[in-house]
Length: 119
Image (cartoon, rainbow, N blue to C red; front, side):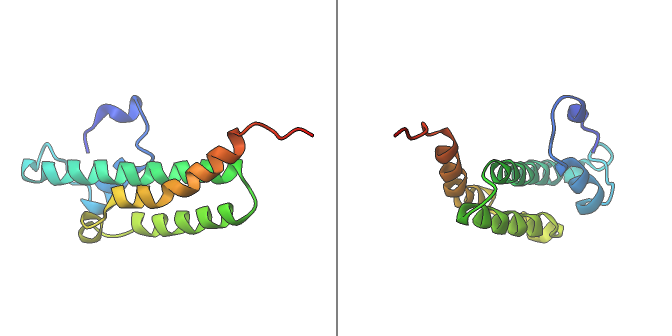
């Protein structure tokens, strides 16, 4: 993609997905007519891949119970979305996916950060 950011921050694999799979190695500098599409898909998939990472970390903190099962289902669904082709990823509503996942992330967060009960 010609982006220097990989040395500065992680895109959680979104850059590779966009440049290698969705746009088949097309460089936005050589094809400026699709630069906006490449950029748009990159930022959308970066959010999706980051959400998968957050859910994996959340699940590792709370390894058992119904919350973990829900998180695993969400991870599987999000990984399916991450494997879609360009046309399908363009239709993804990552904000909605994030909102849908937030309740489980919050539930685990509040369980692991709440003060321990004392007798």
